[in-house]
Length: 495
Image 1 (cartoon, rainbow, N blue to C red):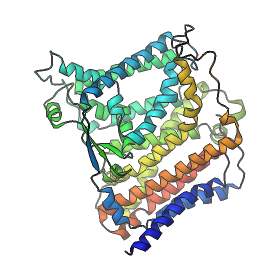
Image 2: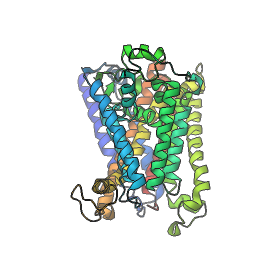
Image 3: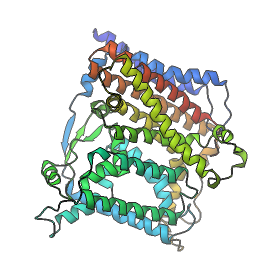
């Protein structure tokens, strides 16, 4: 291809990426405000975004992009195994401190560090960090450091203690699915998710669950398949330009295969790669892993949808006289499960059509596992777009809560009196700007999803024509989900 033509195509692509968000945003208003233009214009704008990104793939030299995503990247060796162990131990100490503040601190959730830190800082913040810095949770989590200290102790140093049970491969990621569903249920359905004492009790139960599982099945097998946040943040990190090339060193893998309960150190090799390259490199994830990713997307979608006036009116609740969560627990519990099932069915149908069109020799579960990495940018984008306003709004309260963690009248950080509530979410113009960022993010992640899905298809069939045909059903699904997501941002809500 002539180099000047290639440059023009790339410039055209960049121009459209920057043009599309303002065009779509011009048709809608901020969340919770009145929609300014007819809904059909809004839907047409949202549908055009993803459809245009699919059409643009015919203009971009996709084979060059595929070869670029195959680039090995820059390898950096870091000596952080020793430091990482103590970072994890410090994380466990901090987690224990949060549990204590939940039991013995202020009863007010807006003054207690436990609910504020977990819901307003850690859950959205760790997702943001994993997107940019890679799988940082594998080094910051409170589980691995204490296991390494035990493995290096005199009792275990010269012998390998086999776990009493072998993790059943057929179980796959089902425990992580259940754990993430329960976490989502507590956050989105349970009437008192911010009650400090209840939250600390659940944290203790989860600690027991993690360490009991490690003792029974071994550290690597249990954390890789059953610890919901290890699976979730690793999934998020696949979009990052920073990648840990090997989860464990060769020596430790041998120890793990030997049955070491606490074995398995962090790798010291980091690779700087093209963003999203890890998504295109994944090969046919298992069905349970696929369902975990679909669950991650469906929960954040349910969170937004369950707060809309449309949904509340549908279930017979007056949005202007909201009765609270308690009366809605049965309905919202079923709806949370229903959102997951609907997402799984829609994704399965799109892949069934791809199977009929191109991938006739593949099983449906294999096709679903092959293309599920393309869903990850969407799940990540919705997560960030949904939690970003809450993160900005609550961050100062998180900081202020540590000034008096046990409600004893301390002022350790020099923050006196009740924390000020930021007013930027009450200013319509600032809400519009924030909304434009959210819309632009949703548009971008859908474009990335189309790109990742097409690259995966091209690698599988090695034909541009067949790859394009196979991606028509998935593109239609993404168009529909773009419409839903943009409508969700603009719909009046009880928040």
